[in-house]
Image (cartoon, rainbow, N blue to C red; front, side, top):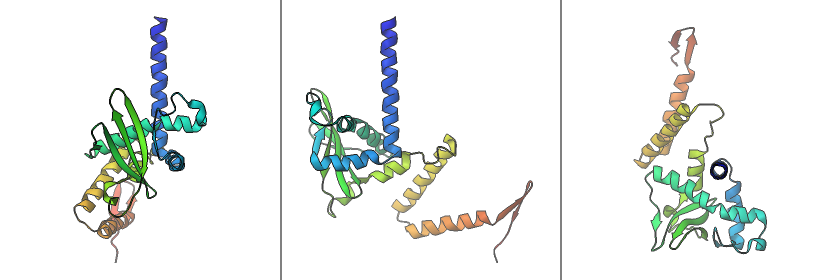
Length: 204
């Protein structure tokens, strides 16, 4: 019985750790900043490259390299919810992500085992449309309003983001969207409430 409880405790701790790491990736760009620096030294790496040579890099780099699997999960979770499928190779599937105009190919290789990898790749005008801006993922899932609003309100914000994106992708000029929002906000600001009575103050 104790052995079973120990296993459950270990799994629970791993789940908590995984959730914390993923949340940090969505609420702080420090992991992406680290990735920018690390891929200058290691343009392509797998999460288990240092499995038998852990002493060859420092502890922070080792842990962050292992955590590339969580970044893949974060990206995959967001994009799959938005009906964006990964690119597929013979043995792998991957996403193309750009962060501050730096490109990354982040994927998973399947064979005898599973290996997550990251490769720094070039971004130019010819392939720019193939990349997803990391800030789209970051801004969508970081729950910026989490300290102020409950989950229902957060979902409304996310719905609003989806509507704006849908309008833009349908060909609506971004300036028209902004003007509509500003006009709506102006009208709300012109509403004055007195007790239970709401009075519309019309602009002259």
